[in-house]
Length: 309
Ligand code: TD4
Ligand code: CA
Ligand code: ZN
Image (cartoon, rainbow, N blue to C red):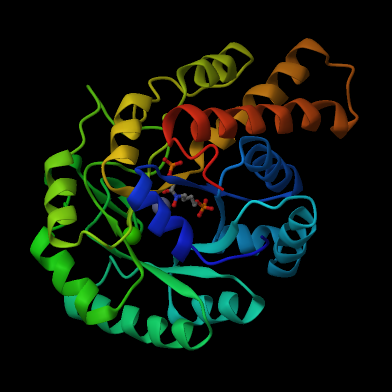
């Protein structure tokens, strides 16, 4: 099928009650692991790159790696800009062949967010590219400001409807209590599914996106710590909650932290157990395998996207 926008996979996700995983990519091993997982699970998939990923890997390398991967698979694949900070970055990605971009105007007030998002939508739609926008602030560190989870700015469902109508964005990221990184909750995980439901009532046909949705898989955290890491008390969104979200109107679920943990856990293990190893392939091979296994588990058991290609 090759490179596609997210339009059809999201329509199918709404009709058939599953979510599409959007996995952050930074290098070849990560791209290969995700695409191999999607192929084996026969699942649609979104590869996404943040602006720091683009700075790190360089946009031409990212595009060419994705194109290389597409030669080996028939599942629908979208390449998406994650958290586009401004119009220029979105334009650069659209011009480079991305099929989807996110403009993250959540740090601006409502009207400025609308205006910026609309500008990106106009440019993208003329070129057949779709746009994700964001309304509301994720708890924790978001846009370099620390939003305490107690006064986290959840998405207002009425505003969400007005925002989508005014901007014409194709999908909407909402804040219901998730946050980026490995420390999402102090006590029990709590998500505002009531807000998700209200947003869905107001916007039944708009694909909804969940950011900061890594599980922070306990076995991976343990493994990192066992082999010399220091990430105590890390906690994410339990699989069960993500499965509910996938069945009940969330179309796209973003995952980066769990892939970082998978990769680091395996590399640490080799470093700790085989200090004589200095061939990068000796530790990047198990790292890549672990990312693939992690992605497959999410597609099959959590997002329910396996077989939906
Ligand atoms: O949008 N994302 C991934 C954001 C990571 C970007 O970080 P860099 O700027 O360092 O590349 C998510 O919503 C994933 O959330 P997660 O729960 O995996 O942290
Ligand atoms: Ca944001
Ligand atoms: Zn995010």
